[in-house]
Length: 247
Image (cartoon, rainbow, N blue to C red; front, side, top):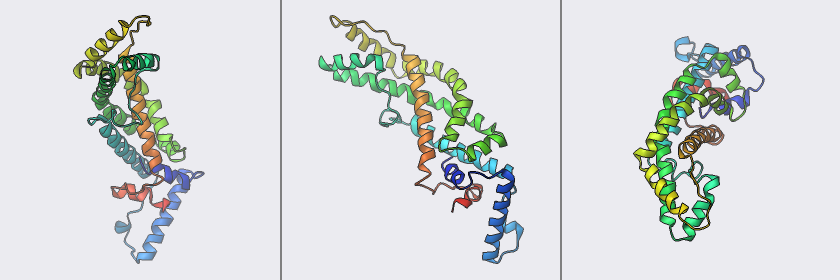
């Protein structure tokens, strides 16, 4: 996924037929420079199917790498771009607890939310892979010719419903698994005992589910934009050929 956006910048108005022509011309130039006349050695791209396959490989590679990072210990908690904090409506809870000398309890509550997200996001990869492998040639063309977040937009549109349905029960289980439910029950109970405060009862499951999904898509978008400064991720012959024109 990392490289497809720079590639798109170089061919904003090309059809797939025109793109095939350019790829063939590029291959012929390479053969002319090397003096090779062997079609088996040059192995040029054959057309739209090759481009689609290359884009799918790039997308799958990028998604797998980012999801793996997020599922690692502190994948959310120590990543300021996606770290889950108190819900906006509970910012007053955070401030109140800290003002009463219970900063450690507040910190423990935040860490527990992030641990639940790290655990739940493990379920994301199969859903993304299914969306990528189901991509049509027309989808690949739109992504190829799209803006710097075209792949993220595609994945959001094709996975959000499935992700929420999958994440929600997993998040609920994860909250219990990492002890977040007990930590937050204690945290909220302490807060609700403070005189003169409005009692709260947040829906942590829905909140963490939404934030976990938001974090996944945010990191995929980061992966897309990173291609503008890092072009070293062509790890297969197909990827190298698909993105050769950007050179």
